[in-house]
Image 1 (cartoon, one colour):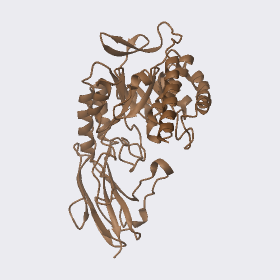
Image 2 (tube, one colour):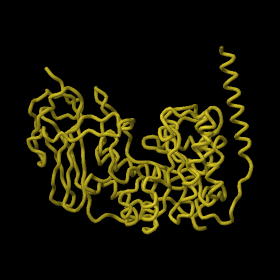
Image 3 (cartoon, one colour):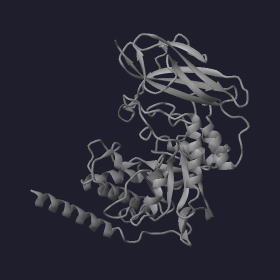
Image 4 (cartoon, one colour):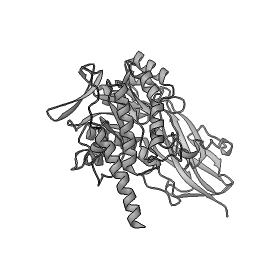
Length: 436
């Protein structure tokens, strides 16, 4: 049985190599493409309209006018939703767009298998009209071929890489004027088989979604079997919820806003030291989104107030300091007990909570508290736990009272602090409710 299984794998691998070998033929090239990557004296340099172009980008299409106002020059999307509006608005603002194409699982179906080459070809052909439609848009910078496709299963990494490369080849057949890019999680381990560079020859740029793993990406690029070509930070920001410490019941502990900003400052310094293959970055997330919490990656509040992460990016992009900064939370607590670790509350009992906040500019402050069940299945359900406002006796003061939920389980208490100049900060405490 082992012989036949190994023989089957050998046939598949040889078939894949036969395809990759056929990819070595030259595609039609154009003189002076709109966007291209040149390798000069061992360095990768991105050119747009024949001028060097360093990406100072935001991951997300919200508040595009502020990207431009604060010195950024590009945005990144993960799909073509609202692509017409996004590209037109970006062009109006003088921004470029790395336009994402959803490929593989789950967009091609949760039961999609990459080894079914006939299905792969069909799906790739469905993308061709999209490339035709947007290839000449003046805001287009490059194509994002999938996002962390490896995480969603459906095949071995070599076959997923094979599909990514095949999509990239089709794009180049239709549009020789813009580079192709695909993304990997920042902690992706090196390939023991062959370099991604050889598996994906039609991918021009490797994007890393890197948070606490920013230091590791240099090994992935420069190691013996590394990428050894142009790369970018396709997502970067504070530590991810998969990277932080957890409570006793498994809830990830979100960093304070001050810690998030400090990390972004150190990451910015680290990633911009590379002057060999690094071509720029997209900060994550430029907008407001739910991912475990609705504050973890969000740089804007639900109302559109700005965090100090925005202030830092403005300085990083433009060198200009912001005139007014956000409030600062030094501590929040649920009484009894001063610690925020492993907080257990009795069901249906009354508790108080307090936030200690100041404003560096001495602006007046306003408060909003929220109580939500812990969110774990955001990728699967796309439905988020609502604010259980009915448990609050007050929810708009620095000190409030609330009733612990009646059902046992894990929850999270949030506080949002706003000044009167359009800025905010936030912090939260996970807690567990049990019944006696």
